[in-house]
Amino acid sequence: MTDEKKKHPGGRPTKFEEWMIEDVVELGQKGYCKVQIASKYDVTPNTLDNWGKKNPKFLSALARAKTHAISHMIKLAHENLNNRNYQSKLWEIMMRFVHGCKEDRNPIIVDFDECKTLEDKCDKIISHTLQGSISPDHCEKLIRSVCARANLKIEEIERRVEEIQTRLKNS
Image 1: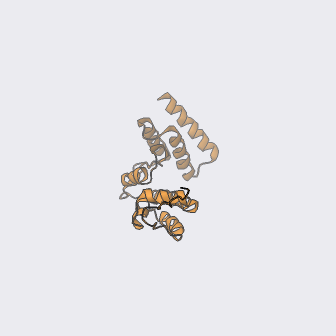
Image 2 (image 1 turned 180 degrees about the vertical axis):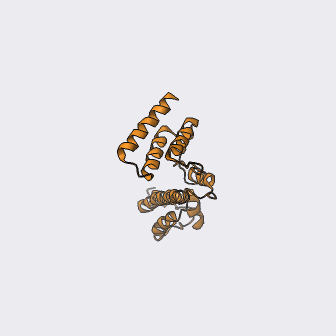
Image 3 (image 1 turned 90 degrees about the horizontal axis):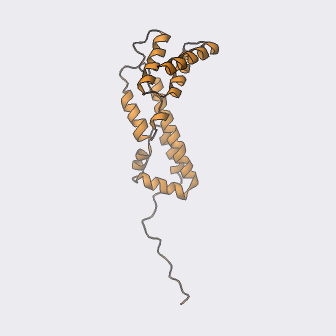
């Protein structure tokens, strides 16, 4: 027989709607992670991924939402650098586990509360680097950032970075 039976598509109807594309991005801007977005739509994170496979615009929206959510978290950390009550460990856990940031991509928060001088801050960063909690690349970035905030000239920043690299090599 050449009559082929039409295959039943199976499964339940999708909950996906076009308005969700922009909504996902807005949720990411508020700091929502994929689990929270899925919860809002009463689906699983895997369902969001499946929707993305079927709809490139939605896939792009998910990627943008993740970028916005991580940016939101980093902004919170920057706004609270001098806030003694800010839960930086909770922030680190959220970045690592909720938003999927790997440790080497995580911005490191160094507590500069006891540091009175630029030298103290640099020493603290070096100490964290020697302990292994900051990679040498992050050390250099933090030193540059701290020096820039102290309004040092670029030549002075470069001199300090070279000095610190030498100290790290000799340690």
